[in-house]
Image 1 (tube, rainbow, N blue to C red):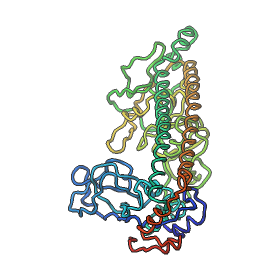
Image 2 (image 1 turned 135 degrees about the vertical axis):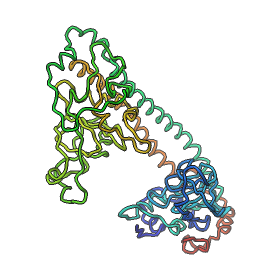
Image 3 (image 1 turned 180 degrees about the vertical axis):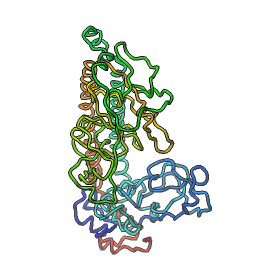
Image 4 (image 1 turned 120 degrees about the horizontal axis):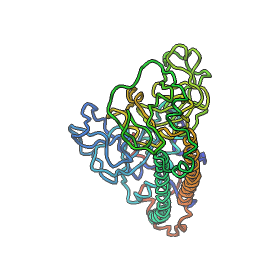
Length: 496
């Protein structure tokens, strides 16, 4: 971590729009109006899940509950109360008000405590994040960025009169309240779209989207039995069939072992390995750099997450031919369906070109009896419920006995393609609506930014003409009226 500039020098660069101030305001270092209390290095050996005092770590500051508790003696001065201002000093440098019960201030989290009547706490909170964002942007780092309490104390806050501060806070509250209502409506609409998308998939794989079409074409459709007679069974790699395990039914067209779940007339529950070659991938050794950085596409969990429900054309990492030949990784053909089966379970995509995958995937290369997109959407129809096929409390994993025992509800190939067409038409409509919602959310962010810029430049309020009140306000916090430079302030309250 290296911050090459002081906070004042960052402001002087004039590159960050929210660090502006009105011409009639001065600036004051944060240390003149507030203290910066560093958290304590509580012993991790005494961290527990259930017993003890809640312990606020960086990951907890925006929540109302903590992941860990401290089951030991502690100094009361490190107890955080609801509403206290906290700053995470590693990572993203986030400021938040604590919303939970009394808790302990752990190391790498600091508390900002106002010590001046001349500064409004709500105004202070509103000001902080833009300065932290600018400091974060100017901090270089190889790994995680770090923030010091000394830097926080040097932040040159804008200094309107306390009357104007409170006026600004009131106006921002009013404007943000209206904006938040709109954003909440956008979030609700997004959730409704998510529910609708899942309903489309559910209905599709219950046969409801194609019920009328199926009735109109019933005399023309090849039955699954004839289809399977015509299409040979794909060869399978070593590993054999699935173990004899109980039936696990999903909410869509997948189940483990032969299920009892009813399906439309003209469909048949079919072992997935009967209509697709099932494999898994492998990760070449990270100890051999010569295995990495080549031209062979290699799919990891992040790639699947970014391309969920889509055809993947590129990967974040690539391996070399040596990486392929010296590992169990194998290049799979274009059209192979990939499902993440461990840790982040449920991401599914189709290979757009020959690619290898990590061992975190189960893959299926479909025969002529199974449409690749039908399989992908059938997996997606399970939604979050696909985790029921897996095991584990901390990290769910779908193991290969279950994967080898998967069955799929199989209609005719003609109906598979119609289902895919209907699903894609409906999902495309939701994508268009989601894109518009995202555009509105982006406009809301721009508007929020514009409101703050107007606030910090003094445009939300009229210029304070009460010079006597302003002068007293400056004197109260130790300001030398002869200069606007924060370097002339008494810095005796600075903490390092």
